[in-house]
Length: 129
Image 1 (tube, rainbow, N blue to C red):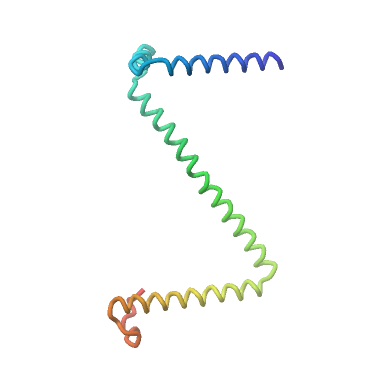
Image 2 (image 1 turned 60 degrees about the horizontal axis):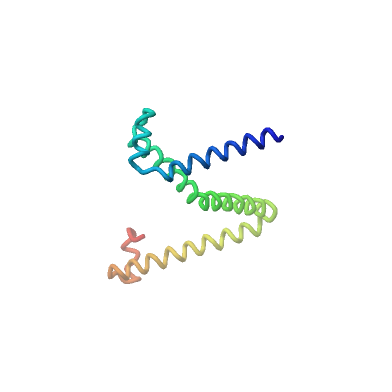
């Protein structure tokens, strides 16, 4: 166990030294050192940029992944509830359908009013959403 700890401490010390060396070096020195070891600085810069952007994107999408997980969980609970209480689920589904129908009728009326179509003429304008 102590050997692993010493190795970890050595790696930490090496990492710290490399970080300090990079922070102390000028941009020109870093570019020159990259060229000396056979790296193309512009290719390496593009690779690092892609790596950083990928990390930022993954962090930002964390909330999206959590929301998807929550929705899956909610859908599973709703399905279990529907299996346990089918009659209540049918009633709730009917309510949703009626409300959607009412909302569609309201949208058609508002759209028709915006287009100058009177409610009594609505049956002639079936293309209204």
